Structures are given as C-alpha cells and as structure tokens.
Amino acid sequence: MAPQTEVGAKAAKVAAVAAGASAKDVERESASARLLGAGSAGIAELLVFHPVDTIAKRLMSNQNRITSASQLNTVIFKSHAADPGFVRRFFTLFPGLGYAAAYKVLQRIYKYGGQPFVRDYLSTRHGGTFDATFGKGNSKAMMHATAGSMIGVGEIVLLPLDVLKIKRQTNPEAFRGRGVLRIVGDEGFGLYRGWGWTAARNAPGSFALFGGSAAAKQYLFKLEDYNSASWFQNFVASIAGSSASLIVSAPLDVVKTRIQNQNFESKESGMKIIARMARVEGPTSFFKGLVPKLLMTGPKLTFSFWLAQTLIPAFNKVL
Image (cartoon, rainbow, N blue to C red; front, side):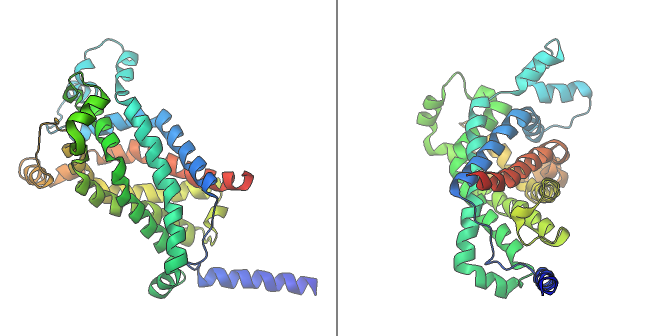
C-alpha cells in the first residue's frame, strides 16, 4: 500500500502543477524576514552599484550629442574630467552617498519587503477574483505583478530623498553650499516635483518587475511555491523581471530624471520636457541611457531583487 500511496501523492502533485497555482495559495513569511531580507539587499546593492547609478543618471541628463571620448569623459566626471589618475576620478562618482544610502535602503525595504504584504491582502480579499479572471494557471503571477504595481505607486513618499540624490549626482551646483535641513526648509513640497511622472513610471515598471519574476517561476520553472526556488532559479527570474521593468519604464524614467535634476528654481513641466525632447532630440531621446541601464543598472536591480528573493525565505526559516 505504501508504494501505491506514494505514487498517488506524486500523481496528485503533478495534477496540481498542471492545473496551475491559485492566487489564494501564497507563501507567507514573517514580517521580520521580509524587512531583514529586503534591507540586506538594499545595503549590498548600494555598496556595489552606486558609481554605476551615477554614470547612468549623468548620461540620461545629458542633452547634447556625444561625439568624442573626451566629451563622454566630461559628461561622466563633470568638472573632475581633467583630474589626473582614474582612481581619483572614480571616487568622484560617489556624490550624494548619504542621500543614496537613506533612499536606497528605505526604497528596497519598502518595495521588496512591502510587496508581500500587499500580495497577502490581495490573496485574502481578492484571490477568488484573480482566479476567476485569469485562471488558476495565471492568477498567482498576475497577483504578484498587481501587488508590485500598487507598491510602486506608493514609492513616491520617498521622492525627496531620490530628488536630493539625483541632484547631487547630476547637478551639484543646485545646492550652492546649503545643507539638507536648509534645502528642505526652503523647498518644502517642491521636493515632490515630478511625483506624478514618478508614479506613472513606477506603476508599469514595478508591475513588470514582480510580474516578470513570477512568470519565470510559474511558466519556466513550473513552481507553485515561489519561495522554493533555488538561487539559480531566483537569479533567472530576477533577470526576467528587471529587464522587463527597465524597458517598460525607460521613457518616463528619462522625463522624471530631467524634472528632478533641474535647479530648484526651475519649474519646467514634464509635458514641456517631452515636447522639447521630441522636437529637438527626436524619439530616441526617450530611451537615452537605456543601454547603460540594461548593461549596468540592470545587473544592479537583478542583484538586489535576486538577493531579496533568496534572503527573505532564508531568514524566514531561521527566525
């Protein structure tokens, strides 16, 4: 009887996989595991990739055609382009590290640690609706994507830190010797400039990030329990999610960056920036910096997302 029972259990499992995972069947980690895993991913990403982020932001902010290596050098290193020695110039790629540390760690805790809470809510309150709308084979991945999109829109609460980080990276003259508290006092809610464009970028970008990862686990690796994914499976899923996210959000990311890197006194709207880009720089300007982002920022997002997806279940087992 024992062999027959074992065979029956295996057959039931195969049938369940074939039917597809339900949106009601989600993995519930502890809050501590989610926060620790997401925070650790944010810290590791910051230490490894902050210079890469600075280069990508400066390339996106450049509004002129780059026709020579010396011009590229000036765009990347700005006033330090003529400094002797690459090592010295390399350390100039760490402006705004204080803002970057605060923003990046809080952002990753919020996004990677917060998405599971939204996912749990959707599963409990609307899991049946997802199953009925998308079918059990697709509903779980769609729910992960929807939860990611919702948490991405809410990310605008951290926008002031992102604004200060980007200005330090691309337009340090805007500070004019003022400290953080002075800038916050002077600018107030002006630090939320571009919040609408940020939300518009984050909604599809986060949908693609979490949805692409979930789809890879669901359709490529045939996993019902996403937390059971191996390090390699999480890595492949993170590549799928991060690549989709960067491509989908690229046009609005360029607009958002140009809004945020203006001088504090500048009030040029996103629609004016879009019109000028289309008229002066052409349609390809909306994808400026995409190749560096895919080659450099892509691995950064893949790295932190992979680490978070791996560490959260690991912390959940030991806590």
